[in-house]
Length: 307
Image (cartoon, rainbow, N blue to C red; front, side, top):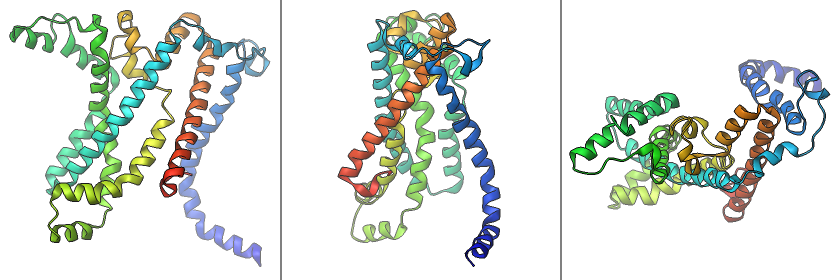
């Protein structure tokens, strides 16, 4: 009897299983099969012997990340940039979503949505050229404006102090609009009766935002922040490698992250084991951070925790 019930349930849900197959295949190919590469992090790779035939080297590949004198600078840059991106990105995305929710005309809303999402579709290589067009020391638009205003021109690619702000600005311009889509969807799901009741009670737009929109967005914000925390020790390679200039050594103190450091090291050493070790280090630390952040959220507000 139980067997026949299971068969009927399977036949009834067969279309759903078939629809899920592409997603499962993608998950298997891109997330699980590459996990065999973890072995490489503990191997001294010999391509003639393959992954499993190469000799073990323990944690020697991980020393590559910490033996350099700039290890603290690299980790500091990676963490602080990501913290800035998470905080500012969340604030800007929520603000954009709230503003977009106030656009009631269909055509205008579609135009604005396309405009804020477009930067995310632009390759970071193209973004690097756009930044260079603005900041070129000789022909850049910014220096022309400074000259016209009677100010001294700036060698942007030789001054480290400006680049933390430039990189944060570029990242926010590129990603904030795209990140706001999740919050726009959450706002669209809020019961409109709540706003009508608030208006009848005399609440203005700001009061509605702070009393209805933001409290109901809280679970979504927490979920997105928790997911972002897992990449605290990773960075956007294109942003930190392409935008400041691929060989701009003068800027390394403020633009070098774990990902760019590993890539430049691999270009010189050609040791794929070190790259795998760096990836494993970032993944393990990211997992620990997500579990820890979720633990804190669960202690404060169990309903909004991921697990």
